[in-house]
Amino acid sequence: MSKIIAVAGATGNIGTRVVRALGQQGATVRALVRASTKAEARTELERLGAEVVSVDMNNAAALSAALEGSESVVSTLSGLRDVIVDTQSKLLDAAVAAGVPRFIASDFACDFTRLDDGENRNFDLRREFNQRLDKAPIAGTSIFNGGFADMLLSGQGPFFDISNRRVQYWESPDQAMDFTTMNDVAHYTALAALDPSAPRALRIAGDVVSARDMAALATEISGVEFSLFRLGTADELARKIRDARAADPESENQVFPVFQQMQYMHNMFSGRAKMLHLDNARYPSMQWTTLRDLLASNAALKGLSAR
Ligand SMILES: NC(=O)c1ccc[n+]([C@@H]2O[C@H](COP(=O)([O-])OP(=O)(O)OC[C@H]3O[C@@H](n4cnc5c(N)ncnc54)[C@H](OP(=O)(O)O)[C@@H]3O)[C@@H](O)[C@H]2O)c1
Image (cartoon, rainbow, N blue to C red):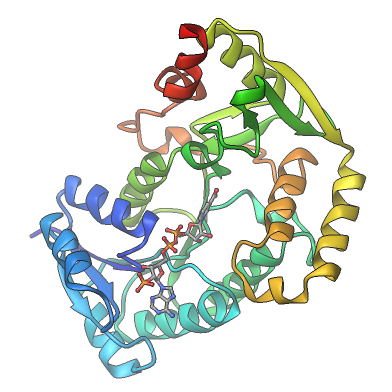
């Protein structure tokens, strides 16, 4: 009988990809959705082979019943404190009550274990949840993947400025940064969810590149010279973050406001959230997508040489 894996946040961007990847690994997928989830989203999850279970995360008994028999719970929830700390804690308690052996937290980030509180608002929430996970009688796993490569390196910023043929950077063009495509993250997460001895933290990167590497690759692939454009120092970026936060208190209620996006950039360009080692080799079936692979299929980049 195939293993049952429960996915919370199954309608989301990463959640749907994890459901698909688990199906490809032969797992039985229980996709947890809200009562409000639209019929099309349920049908899409069913089309991927998942059993769709509508459950109220505030109903402890119903939630633990929904998790019964699962080998792992994968959380791909996204939100602020009410979701990352509060709702994930309810999911964690239900997983423990149902005797689920493993909980994979919705981390999917740069290595925030080395950051101090205050360096990244969204990562602070994840560290807080992970402290609860550490105390719970269940094996916890965090997956650190750097930035989502296809989201951040598509050409619409924050790194590439394809129309101006340049790569933007803070502090140093030689700071190495970790990136993984969303499908590679989902595939690896599926393998970890099915791995009875997955460790507490798994660190991966489909590619590790600097701004200088990005410009060189873009130049090579497009046949058009890409330059490097310095936006400022890391300290200047830290000041901009403080100013943006002070100027717009409402942004504290948004998941990805401007100040938050700048905090991710600061963590990456300062090197403070850089992975120090990678667990890419743990699952030999993984075929990693590199920046070269991504840029080679980037229509905007290819279009430059055609002009
Ligand atoms: N490393 C990177 O570059 C990067 C970039 C983006 C995201 N991420 C991370 O990846 C993870 C997944 O993000 P995503 O982009 O896939 O998020 P998403 O597309 O916004 O999906 C979030 C999921 O969580 C569900 N959800 C939110 N609040 C809920 C609640 N209170 N109760 C039940 N379900 C709830 C949503 O359900 P509904 O559909 O019903 O709303 C949805 O299924 C997050 O940890 C995020 O921070 C990383």
